[in-house]
Length: 359
Image (tube, rainbow, N blue to C red):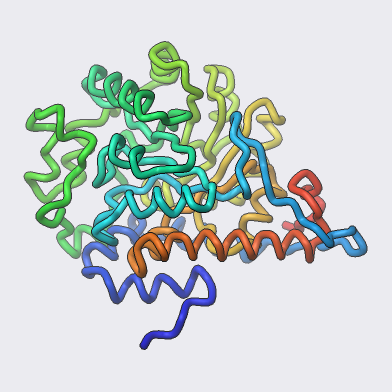
């Protein structure tokens, strides 16, 4: 009997045993030399905590406000593709676990379960992650479906004009197994919409479907077709953060796509403070990339994030033990975060400041 996981990091080894090698590499891998993939973790380790004592932390409140939502803690599920590669229940298991925890889940366009089915299983708040397709009517319909399903926001991913060079997938010859497809695109019935299910190349899928010529006009267009808040995901510079706010974004997700796009960019936690300074509280900021501990969540909040999004962390829980695994990952992170707040002398989220970390 394998040892019982005592932290989120323990789940990865269990997940690796449960998954096929190519599916594991698809989840775990980054672009090229995976420098950014590694940096997302290493950067957290370089940040030290500066705890304050005698701060009255007999009770600790971890709840936070985010675009009209009250969340029990600043941890949400990131949009991750093809959850059924990890477990047959896939996104449905993740949605159920998030709902039980009161956590926000951001659903991926490239999911192996439709947004309608995810919404039917969910009891917590949902957002919808969106790519802009060459066919704007497909994009418009995806937004309408997300609205009809009850999603509370649209999260526009902007760092994928082309797919990063994911060499683990190339070496392993990654293809979609029988019975798993990009469900959100099936109804459109075009050859391009189903292309990745019919061939072996995700790069080909991106090249044929996604619009590589996007400009900031796409943000204005998207805002014109929905009343939902629009967040911009994939921002890594203060300049782009300012442009996002100028174009009406309701929030920013500081993200390097988990190290899967442009290798060699800075870790998200390293660029977060400069972006936070430029945004100056005008819109809420979230971040993803490398979050595996409650201390990571604390550091992100201290440096300007309203919340973090976890991707691989919950995928390993999903692959290890389905819905129960995702629930356990959320419980672990929430417990560690609350303990970190208590030990650092922060009785509430508002008490966490940049002075609590040293870079």
